[in-house]
Amino acid sequence: MNTTIKKAFVTLTAVSCLACGASLAAAQPLEIVPISAPITGEIIPISAPINGEIVPISATDYVIAHQNKLAPVRVYGQAASIEENRITLENNNDNAEFPSIVLNIGENTRILNAVDGLPMKLEDIRENETLYAYVGPAMTMSLPPISNAELIIAGIPADFAVPTYAEIEGVKKGTDGSVVLKTNQDVDFTITTDTTLIPFLTKNIITVDHLRPGSKVLVWSQAVTEDGKQAADAGTANKVVAFPYEYAGYVEAGLEGLSVNGEALELTEDEAPYAADGHLMLPLRKLAEALGYEIKWNAETSGIEVVNGNNVLYSLTARGSEVTTGDGETRELFATSVVKDGVTFLTADDLIALNEVKIVK
Image (cartoon, rainbow, N blue to C red; front, side, top):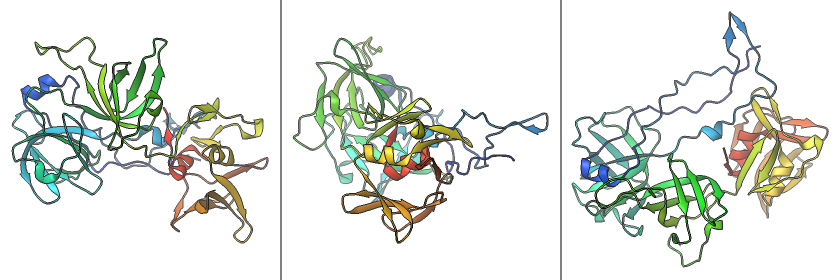
């Protein structure tokens, strides 16, 4: 039987992002990353036909779709028009694939000053001002394309190295006390003892230990020398603003084991992760309890409940194909839950989504 992935992540369209004038491009050595090539929306077969025959997937092969989550795309240009909840960015570069893009401004969109990272209001932005924005990654197929803005950087001085907005994918500590942050913007930043670490809009004191996979940061780095050339220490962070952590924790998972927030979990042989039908299967109780949650049995519904304090986060039946969230919404699982030797397993993708954790690549 041809096994297929039950769910595919589909972007509305794929477009290249805007390129802007030479002055700011020279001040920012990072290459503007185009929006990813389109996913057609077709169901992608795990098994590939060879000579007309379907070759079954290997027992050790699996895909974690959340590891391929697209990062916000950086675009920049001039604010051609500013409306109540929209900004139209226009580019004078003839090589730009699209001459303009419309940014939707939602209640969660942050508008920050390029110099100090402090919040600005939409009315603080002037027409024809140069802006950097992190959007999407989905865009409409209209002309100009429309995308939701996650963060906008404004108030940019001339010849200023614009900070980079990114989510941390991994943290590596060096023997010299330095820390290297791998980010979803295809650039690594080195944190040294000279780097200033600032929490966003709080007076708390933070250290490098607060920077973990899933942390969103705004990073100022020594990007260029006085003559406009890229500096040798371009990846060294001068200042980092860390935003409130949005995940319940971060998880590393594979056939070799499972760790939560950097701590490897002790698993019995019955609790060991395994691959099935292209999914990585993980033990529900072990992961949930490592996050501080409690597993309860509901005799009335014959279901499993994952509880945080007095709140039911989600519930499901053993060997069921659906899950009910705490707000009463029912949705289909990536794959039916499995009970093996008294241990309940769910796919890694289901546990990542239900527990709102960051999966480390």
